[in-house]
Length: 129
Image (cartoon, rainbow, N blue to C red; front, side, top):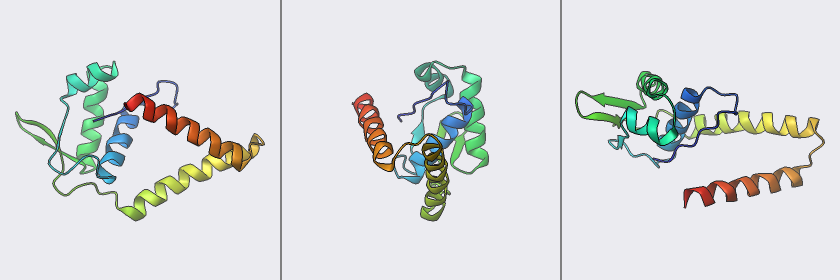
């Protein structure tokens, strides 16, 4: 499971974890029944406090995205992600609307914005390799 956090994002780290796990499950990159890393292992990987990961896992459990199994770890819910296609589209549309509004305020053209997006995608893909 590949999660990237940004301490300067303005979004609490536990919410970054929650959102990314939700999106990975919704996209099918995390399969129902797939085990997530233990709290301590993910905390070490992300170089954060284990309590932050534990809080994210509690939020994900409450949302029905993951299911803990006593003594056996945490797994993606067998029901899969509650984020269906319509919900994913709604979430992305809201974020795109915010981005477009900010770009307009900074006089950034759609062409410039598209190039920035492509550049960021290349950077992220390079990190994953």
